[in-house]
Length: 359
Image 1: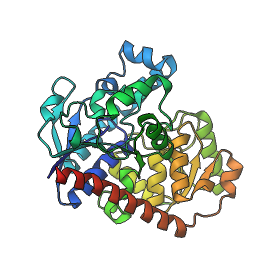
Image 2 (image 1 turned 180 degrees about the horizontal axis):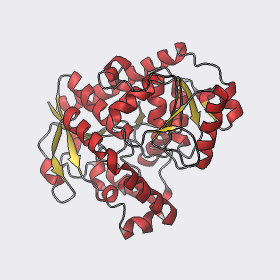
Image 3 (image 1 turned 120 degrees about the vertical axis):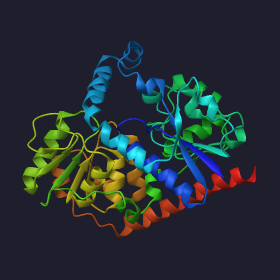
């Protein structure tokens, strides 16, 4: 079969790009051809326009603009990764994405942020509206970024999701909410990055140039207190900080604002500690069995879901004292939970593929 996937992968977001790669690789391992539809989303590509300002508000608008500008120098590394490791379709946008209809035996949308209105603007194409045959449409571990569909968006989700033959999402709370909303089965399943083993990720990981012990800090949400937290932890542990991309505040560290996905994997793999508020920072720290400290942030729902699934709720902290008191991570139980989570994800994905084969 020829399978198409649609993801939020055209932007300089490490986790989104790696989950796109993981989903494609897993489908290929099942013996199918797979292409990523290289879709340009208007909402995501119009960071600087006035519509974005109206939707996000001034603070989020300015933060988004600063983020885009800061990511420009690393675009080269991300583009090189896409070119070398992703099999993609021609570039399409909302005007010509209909050309992708009928070219594949099945279409899978997922995972990271594809249904997050703050990023994709509830773009109908992320609900596979450009595909005419509803039986050939499914989602794998699609994420809203929230545990519940906002009230003002519920009618939109009802309208579009009724056309997907199989719906799976990443967060348990979102699965329950959507199931109630749609009055049908919605399954929660693992992020695509967990479908691959550490050995499979080793193929991509680039070993850091640094040959000393370090604490890796991977920060997603702008926060001065997060930088202060990392600085104090490093002071107590007497280890240098490597910071991706850079601290929001005063913090002595080795900044890595322009690294690509392969270098990032290498820094995760070789870190003594990882401090993060990121879902995928936590995922890869777990895959590589690092001493993980999850700093509680506004991304709490997706991190809470992950930590419960992997039995790592004790690694979520909000004070420096709790972080310092954490023992070294014992991965014996976590390793088994990851294996179970992966097996369930593989079965879920295989169910989707078997459905497409039956058509």
